[in-house]
Length: 131
Ligand SMILES: [Fe+2]
Image (tube, rainbow, N blue to C red):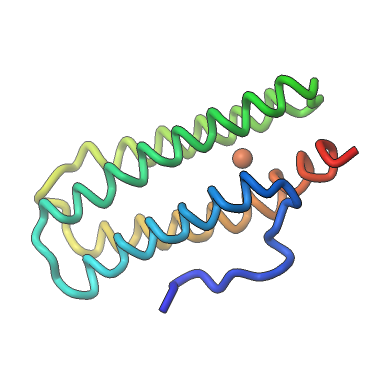
């Protein structure tokens, strides 16, 4: 069971990015499952690293598509991405001895961020790119 219930309203209309958003949801679930099943610290750092890596890849793809389309809000959107990356790297830097509560805080934060970001920002480029 996923900790994020995907809603129709989260779809941006850009197939590639919707697919990538689903992948991020999956990776948040992996992290959540690690905490729930009390997996060892190395599994948690692996799950965090996978999230950091994949979101970086996804943000680059989004930014490239927006740049190619001369998307007017590109800079503001990049700032949002940058903020998330900084926060994620802070969590990653804690390393294997990260407390379970911290990890919980992290995936809850990610869940909130992802949903807000998709609804507030990503849907706008979706509408723009569709034109
Ligand atoms: Fe985005």
